[in-house]
Each structure stands twice: as C-alpha cells, then as structure tokens.
Amino acid sequence: MPSFISISELVHTFSNLGHNETIIDQLDCVFSKNEITAIVGPSGSGKSTLLSLIGSLEKPTSGTITFDDVDLSKLNNTELSSFRFEEIGFVFQQFHLLPSLSVFENVMAPFLTKKVDFKKEERVKEVIHQVGLETKSHVLPSQLSGGQQQRIAIARAIVNRPNWILADEPTGNLDSTNSELIFDLLVDLHETQQCGLIFVTHDLDLARRANRIIHMQDGRIIEDQKGERVC
Figure 1 (cartoon, rainbow, N blue to C red):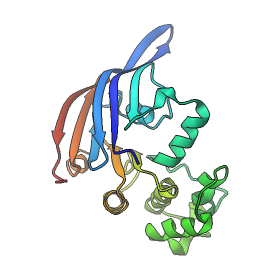
Figure 2: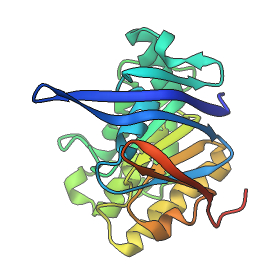
Figure 3: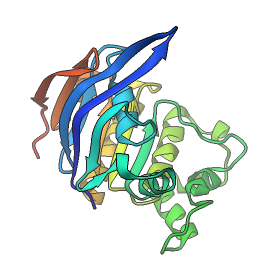
Figure 4: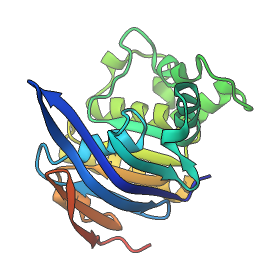
C-alpha cells in the first residue's frame, strides 16, 4: 500500500516534425497519500502528461517514478499492467463508458482479464451503491446525465480498491452543481477509503479546496503551495 509517490529528474519529450519538444522538464516532486493534491497550469504546461506518467500510461524519456520502493522503470509491461490495476484508479474528463454495455457491465469491465480474491459481482454492486446509482445498474450510459456518467466512471475507477486515484479534469464536462457532487465524492473516497487523490483542473476555486496546489508551466513546477483543506 504505497504511501508516497516520488518523482526524480523526470523528463518527457516527443518528436514534432523532426524536432524534440520537451513536455516535462527535469521535474522533482513527492506526493503523499494523506494529501489531496491539485495540479493546475495553462494548457500545454504538462499537467495531464505528468498524470499519465505517474499512472504509467506513458513511459518517461528519463528520470524515475517510484511508489514507495517500487520503481516503475524496472517493471516490464506485464508487471506494469498488474501494478496499475492493483494500485491506481483513473478518472478522466471524458467518461469513456462503453455505450453498448450497461452500467453494471461498464463497472465490471476492469475485472474481465483479472483475478481477484473477492467476489466481483458483489464488489461491482457495492461501488455502484457507493456512488448512489444502484437503481441505474441495468441502463445504458446514454440514459444517464453527464454527472451520473461521471459517477459511474468513478465507480469503475475504484472497483479494484486502488491506493491512488488520478483524476484528469474530472469536472471539466459538468455544470457547477454536478462539479460539486463529483468533487465531494472524490474527497469522500479519499477520506473513507484512505486512497491518495491527485487531480488536474483548470478550476482554481476547486484547486484551492485541496491540501496542496502544484502550479505547472512549461513542464516544470513553478509554485507548490498549501490549499484550504487541512490534513
């Protein structure tokens, strides 16, 4: 159950028309599971890329990311997939629900190729109830509102009992009322399930409600400050 994510000398580049562009530039940072951390910055500052690197969805050009003593660069693809399933839950701005599957089937999807030591169906029912949509288990995503779809996406993200939730603009497609509901749900999961929460947002009011706010620009952290929430 990793308590810290440590990032050292992280660099990520990509080739654009024959030129290498640096997205993450010699970044050093430590994230604590006990904190809710918001990452903010202008478009193109590298915040979503950083979240993808932390979640092992992308591999950095150089540098290290460690979860306590687990160095992601030392894991092969199979080991990374297992680590990601066991430790990380992802929430995105786009809900990424499969349109032809019911709510129940969407939340069950992460288990399709994985073995677990608990009853899958019971766990799926539990998390759908946890996000308050147990009456919607057998409907299709198209029959849900945007806020409801995001709650199901969160249920899918936590169905594997992750130690960390990584959320990329989780309220970006929602109105203010649903944004509040989704943020409150994520905070409740952090507090009751004791999982770390790192989220990217353009909403500075939302960011201020975290324990910690990291400001990024040009692939670097330019400011690291406390938010309004007290640990």
